[in-house]
Image 1 (cartoon, rainbow, N blue to C red):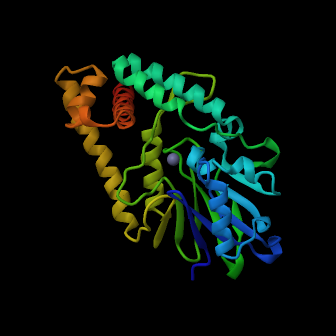
Image 2 (cartoon, rainbow, N blue to C red):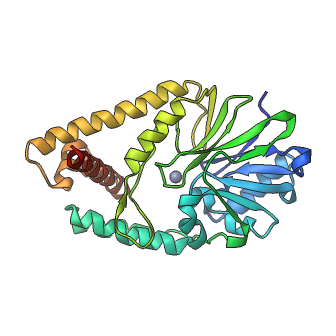
Image 3 (tube, protein in one colour):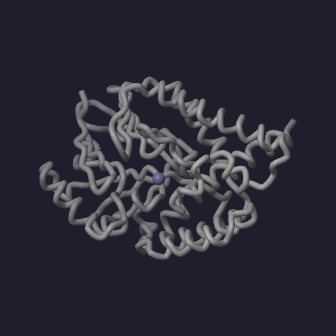
Length: 310
Ligand SMILES: [Zn+2]
């Protein structure tokens, strides 16, 4: 039987679990809410209506270092809360806005190098200026995990961390073997392909981190787990998990095939390839144009790496 409670702040679902008494009691929460003006008030209202006191939150697992999942972590760190996060996302958690600024700068350089026109690029950079500052999580409150970490819950249930690199390098999910429920963050979503974005091997290098390759490996690993129900960070719950995972694998395979065909037809400019791949590209909002092009750049990179290996 499921023992979690779900609350929603903006478009983010947060999940609460009663910890076993022998583990100190109190509550564990998955994700730390969005980075919006009213988010903290909304979180408090939601906790009140589920009869959970803010002071009973003892542990928070953050599924990945995006602002809508770690937004309230800094405020919440003023309570006595331990944050469990995927180790590869540590730089993002401990530097907040500064980390975002570095990624934006590197990403703009990659987009420009791949042929994105200044008109789109400048508009994207302009949009980024209006984002709210993102506060870092103090080092003292963070426990980096790599996977397999477990949390004892009430009713003899256990929450296990599952490493899910792909959407970000340090993406994690939480699995309860007793109920076969998985809390997937952004790694499994209903009706949406998770983005794999542009990531780098480390904060101090320009070398790209092969997100799509990692994402596909993650999906293959998840297929080996018995999953009855998926609770994502956004959108509705999923009962046909295997079908969604198969759909993700198929989606990326089809994309690779399409792009390989264009590359073999001597189309080499990634911006031109993006326009050819997405029929309505020119009608997309700027943010989606950038997301689309990032996806194409990453797939071309993956294909080139595969070619070099052969
Ligand atoms: Zn995300």
